[in-house]
Amino acid sequence: MIKTSNKTLISIKNLRISFLKKNEIFRVVKNISFDLLKNEVLGIVGESGSGKSVTALSILKLLPKNKTISKGEVIYNNANLLELSEAKIRQVRQKDISIIFQEPMSALNPTMKCVDQLRECFDIEKIDKKNIENEISLLIKKVKLEKVDNFNSKYPYQLSGGQKQRLMIAMAIACKPKLLIADEPTTALDVTVQKEIIELLLEIKRTEGLSIIFISHDLALVSEIADRLIVMFKGKIIEKGKAVEIFSNPIENYTKGLLYSRPNNKVKLSKLPTVADYINNSVNNTIINDKEIEISRHKIYSNSPILEIKNLDKYYIQNKVWFKKKKAFKALNGINLELYKGETLGLVGESGCGKSTLVKTIVQIEKASSGSIFYNGADITKLSKSKLNHFRKDVQLIFQDPDSSLNPKKTIGSLIMEPMIVHEIDKKDKSYKTLCINLLKDVGLKKSDFYKYPHELSGGQKQRVGIARAISVGPKVLICDESVSALDVSVQAQVLNLLNHLKKKLKLTYIFISHDLSVVKYMADKIVVMKEGVFKEIGFSEDIYNNPKMEYTKRLIEAIPKGVS
Image (cartoon, rainbow, N blue to C red):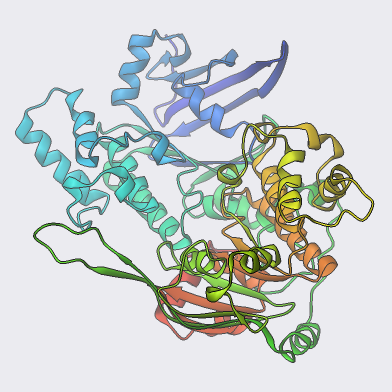
């Protein structure tokens, strides 16, 4: 019989995970060992590809078919979970160990009501129907979904990102597990919602007495919930210990990179340090002083604005129900805005505040209900189709999720060349291929990437392709719509540095959108705080951050992980 200490809930010993690709074996987890204590939150931190998620999935034998556990033990209840039959490991998944995935829509049934998916969790237990309904009501209250209007009739697509994640947590704790594995549960969520999820998990840990493995790429975030930390790099554990100690005094350069690659809101650096900088001991923390900022802004704001928005409204008519009158939902309400050449204008607010609707209206993907949008003196809401196409060449949009904008059947080269061909860009005696390869170099990609497909690139590389596509037509204005929110903090730093580099090189003007005020503060000259389709606060970035006037703005600042702000 295998034994663990009375304080240990689960013990991982000498775990080794490999996968087969093109008849070659790659080792993704390399002989790692660690214990999880009872009623403890253990944080596992690392970049994408570090091995943290596959380590967690191996506990429940949920690895993809191409990945195999070649060595090791996962000891729980004096048994090695890796040696259990499928029937017995299924019992463990149903009763003892639950998992919350990063993307709830991949785990939720879109055709089934949310409450029915909760009900399914209890069907396994075969308990009395009346008791099931009581348990469901209690769960809904525990995860604070009781305030959602008509929750019992809602489908997953009708919930916000944070609400979907709360539903996933409710489903995970329905069986009263001993261990909850949270695999990147807050990635791409608003910072305020992210904070709420962290607080909810801590409350559940306290009230239910369970242990949590919390996986993330964001060390600052994990330090807010974890008792102990494990830092993984290339399949190995390179640092572990108490969260407070690692956060305040990281030893490994890689750990320092994960922590310090986020924008520091106390000073503005000319270039964000990356993980690679720390590993190579090449960090250059040059501070941009107040005088430099003042000179730059004087140059920007001494000119006339290139884009003006006046009294812009956008509303949607909700579907008519036979016994109800039509209702108009106002997504934008009386928006007035000026954008100056060379400016980076930050737009910040929670999901649903109208940020994306505003930029879609600017580029005329959405038509304004009323108001005007002037670009270089011309009202673009009244332009002909040909003139509108010229405007769209000048004002390009970079989306949050490159996967949704990159055709998986086309090579990277053809994807970048496509807008150049559409807009008939002057090649100046060069081929489109040559221009494309030059663009790949400009955004930090390789010549060989020209022939690859999107699925062969990482998230950060795909975002660089999205940037290359946008700048390929020689735009004057780039709109970055949450374009770094789903990236690892280290990759995020690389992309932010790239955007700043391209701004100087190509003399670009940015509208930079994010829910993360720390990122917006680093990038922006001015910040607009948006809520419910209205501009609540406008000012220079440091003024907004250091002296917020609205409670809403204060809440956004308070939601930034400690140590970053």
